[in-house]
Length: 309
Image 1 (tube, one colour):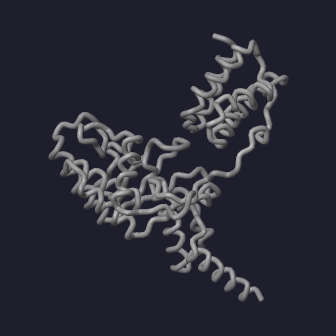
Image 2 (cartoon, one colour):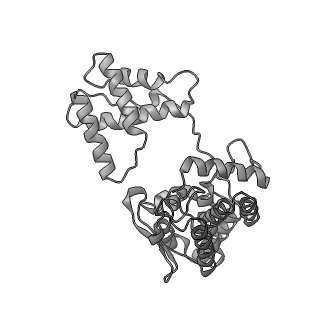
Image 3 (tube, one colour):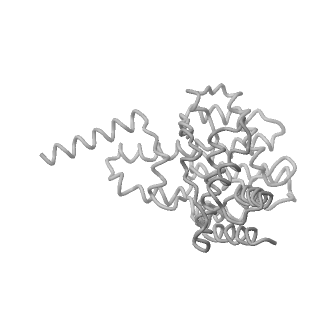
């Protein structure tokens, strides 16, 4: 094994120990190291990094090319601590415009339509799985991956809570549930156990084969439900995505705090913890400026200025 590959393994191990998922890093950096080896290079240079990043092809999206360079930049920064001759390429060498999607904030009617579309799926277990999953996404703000990974023992029926144990940054948290949500989960568990008395997986949600749900499949089914429920994109950058249930939950929570007259800044750490963010700063990404939220924030600020004068 070459020194670069050993360094790559050390880097990936270090990043994972810090809680980063870095799913694409190993294969991307492995490909980059192979590129360097083919070029007879043992030290990262900006020229090599850019050439590899752009080597994905002219049809590749600019954001993907920028991501490739970003992955190399992180590895280069790591190596530069041991080898001063390592060049850390500038991010501006592969520029890209911001392509962050505009969150699609679901209304209560939108969620109801998605759940209604799920109810007509076949067979019955599939319908129950997706109806319950969509409902749980909307009332908890959890990541879809977190709900897919839920095991049966992660549901505390007595306390009415979900235990999220495998998530970003290895943060463990408990999500309190409304009694109506607990009843919905109980109904699903009954339908699941009737279909699969001896399931093939310990997961709370199961497929029609009795196995744990697969992320790609869930996203594909969700896309079908969006079409069946008649939800339309609001713009080219604002399309219904499964992750937007999380944005919706965050915005609805903050709106509720404003309406109740609470100190929103003081409450944000609570929302950050509930969502499983590393710090409140990350939560701000989820607070899209809806007209009502802007109006309430402006009204609160005006009142504060009035008191100050």
